[in-house]
Image (cartoon, rainbow, N blue to C red):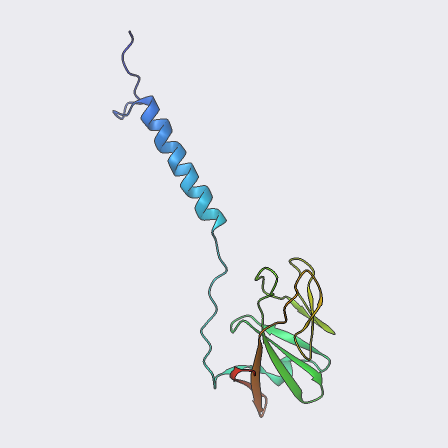
Length: 142
């Protein structure tokens, strides 16, 4: 019977392969669990953007606050959570609709209602006010 083979480090081949397999599995699982960086925490009463960044009849995504702000009509601003209600992706485009490019959901810029699936639920609404050119987050909308 031959002796145990080692790698020169005092570990048996079986133990070396087991350790390498565990390391590979841990690496793979951690790569799958990656998340977007957390946005800066925005408090009620804080400025989330500028009116000059929100075109009339469209809107803008403010990724630092995870909000999308729209201006459906001149001078009327609406805000919604920027997380798509289908799979939680951040919406990316705002023109005549709020669009999530992950799976194609579209939302109304006035109400946040889902227009095109797979999302079925509306975006979370928030109240905002405008002071000068500052858009200020007031809190959840009722």
